[in-house]
Image 1 (tube, rainbow, N blue to C red):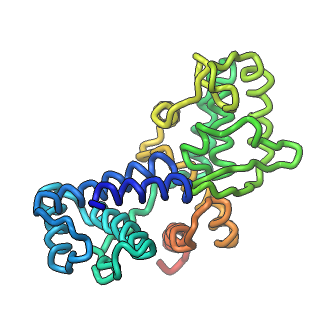
Image 2: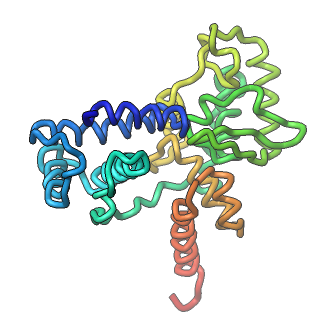
Length: 299
């Protein structure tokens, strides 16, 4: 069985058994196909003979010919390590050669975070006299109340909203389920949206289950949500570089600043590793340093 055939089997494993999202599957496919293409050009078809020097040459190829930065090379190595670990488990190879490869150092980018005042300013820009303004306010309230990923927000199912119990149900990465408490402000604006907008909309076929729809009755795209936030931030005169994940980052940071347990924040965010959540501790320390510098009498 050649490289390509083995990868197809691995792809089905990720899709069916792991239940990964299309976005994640595409990332794996892109990374591994670069690898397959490189070794096809080198006329290397035997995975069992792959050695340390050949892998190092491939990594140099990523840096020089693909002009990838350390972050992208690190991700590529993670994809390949997972692929070869699967090959080892399936006994196609006796040992995973990527276990010995040092990954390039990457420096975590601390995400942009909005203050509570800035959050309020953005929310106030939603025109509550218009259906789209009511929808946008409900979406942003939900995003900030629950720290949702953008894909989780735009694909949020009507049936997973439980206002009486004050929580929502999310099926996140890898089909992992999590229950997230829902704040009263979010419930208030979602109810306004349901009563005044959503219950009067006709959804296009296949879109009936989504809570948030565009004016044509289809679910919103990630890009549309990005444009909504950008427009509202501009109207609020906020100069920060805001991305679709900004409300998620702000949710986590504000919880930790106010004393929330890191494990609880990890669970609400749906992080598989606590290490990912720990970045918000760094944000909190930066905030504390700024407070100390501003208010301590001996600066």
